[in-house]
Image (cartoon, rainbow, N blue to C red; front, side):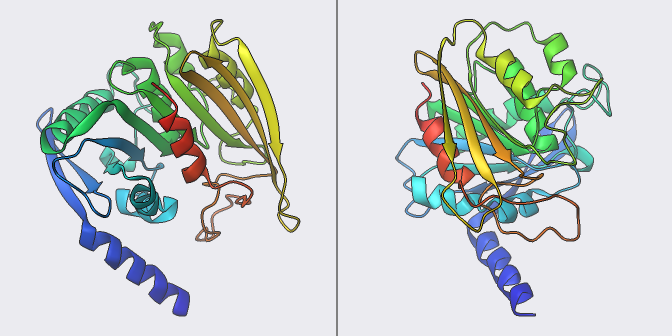
Length: 284
């Protein structure tokens, strides 16, 4: 009962400072949540991070689970939580890539609206997402590299449809985070659906990203996971693969509650919000 009350209070506190808004796109009303950080100054330019929920999740659940508002307060960015139609995103499987929901158009229209409502640093526009929202981040990287400087995909690798239709040669920063024991999105890929985590990394780094390094994080004795990081850079752009060894379909550093779903272990070796911000902040 105590934990339920804590969660309820957390949701209440977040809802007091986060605003739910509506934008019409293609004659459909689309909802989203905007959170401005503590000390927000309407005369100052801010970074903005779009945080896309997983399939079947709501923006509020994504906001609570990822603790992204706390990261926004810590680092001083505006957090935006868009809502997919039927809590889904068009990533090319489960619906038509070309003729399904126009989520790319919605995302660009929403960014235009955010730029009208707030002062946004034009080179500090980023996107992240979990699972289905993470798959969608790869589509953003392919189709909106002129609007977003970098993306971070959590628990999702490159959809085959994105690779098939992507004709862009633009460099964009891409952070890929996958658990090797993920039973929802297979680390080694799925035929006819999406690439493996390693092949996703290879796809985005292209031939220009020649400076490569690797590292391991394994500091917490009671944590049965550890982290392997593979990184390539080209100028100010980087492509990074964060592999959570023995990790599941989770947001690294988040709380362990999983409402009975078989999502596996959540690593505490890395707080992905901190790591992601440092990654984003280094992309130009």
